[in-house]
Image 1: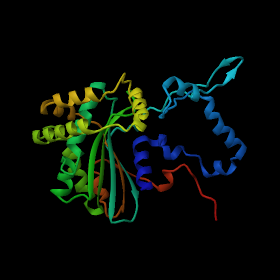
Image 2 (image 1 turned 180 degrees about the horizontal axis):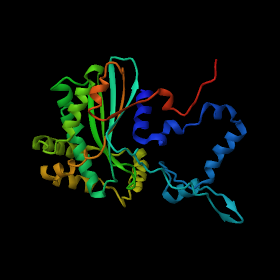
Image 3 (image 1 turned 30 degrees about the horizontal axis):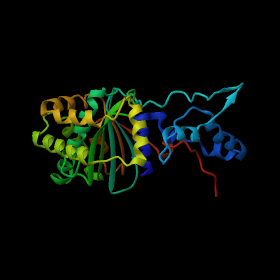
Image 4 (image 1 turned 90 degrees about the vertical axis):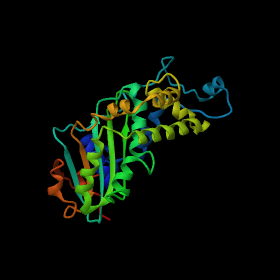
Length: 306
């Protein structure tokens, strides 16, 4: 699982992968407890957001949770700088990153990177995701597992990103027998290139989401996290009523128009499997194959000898 996640992040983000940004073993070996304590305590010197759930009124909670840091009689906190914005690796052609692992199964992840998604398109992204992989009767699972037996599991989703500045993407996940990898990948991509989405599946997806919107309830303990997430998306209030209305108003033509264009950009693949069985020559028809070593994916460096 770690290898798949690390290769996936490397394929999507390159040197910006979080697995490569972790401190190396050499750095950790040199770390001193006092310096680490100062570093952890310095977190309180920065601006931040505090979430509270409990019996206190808002004003009372704000007073109890107030942090003070004074300098020359003024309350001041350091600016942590801009938050991370998601950007994907830039490639000129479809690219397949392969990590050799002797196994009967191949784990496949891929992404079609796209620019940030407009606010009005986010509800359609959710509806399209529901059509593709909302449940076991959805399009991707039925076509790749139930109808053809090409996958143990398969799913696809549109990821709008955490903020309006984040790049969006159409993500896919596939687990299959190693020797079925090229055929399963080809079928998967062809499925996503379809723009004439079946009206029956769209109607089923809309009904499913309608039930979800009507019956789901945010646990009060999690309300703060939802408000922060909405704020990060520049939503002035709860976006769910607007999303529900947009989804219910969408017809097959509107959703098919939204679905078109996602696969018009070079795809980024991450495949962990036995290189002698997954068919590298066949995968070269999908894109340029780049074989990657495990040590390339992690920033830890060599581990101390025991």
